[in-house]
Image (tube, rainbow, N blue to C red):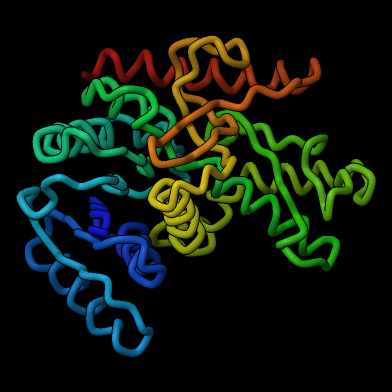
Length: 311
């Protein structure tokens, strides 16, 4: 069976670490693309030389253009400038919209049948840019945010209860950032609702820390933003698609009426399989959750309206 071809655009911290995780899992052959001369080639060679030690036979290629990416099955887009301390995701909008537009135009030419996973920030708006530019069907375009947000939520709950992260199923909806909606009602620890295990005030503090998870790391690092957890989240999405696992994962998907959201990308639970997004799972939300999700969608809508003016 021919190996899948996965392109990662952007060979910075997020892109290079995503390539490393994909290589180590032997999910497919990887092409690492960046505009900086020789840099992706150097990182690709370094990763290739890790193979004998780690025990993988993944082919990893570095490139400064898109010729090497031709006929990719999946393309993960991490390119764009990272947030700096005090900078909101929205400040990034103008700069990254232009970068993502150029990248996607190249992908459409070289890999017209690819599934696109967008990681660039502001996430929901960049996924909208990619959709608008590519005109790909909605099952083949998604944003990586919910998997990361749910991972952060799970990590904080595991720390609080001193239990294995494997026991925790965290549930997060909405836009990536300040308006995300971590649902305590649907989050469970070994099947038990987290609301029964952690007092309300403490749980609210954990929800707030989850919302601010990216900013917390930006402030600690001083120069750059998170990359270990974002790359792990992107790799999990790629794996579910390549292996047709049909995992239910929270992703930024184009909603057309689901959850009362229309024509916008929002974080919702989806089934990820060989065709990409194979189904959006619609679950019953209470009044509070619905209102929070609507606020989140409205915030994304404002960004998308700005995008429409930029493109």
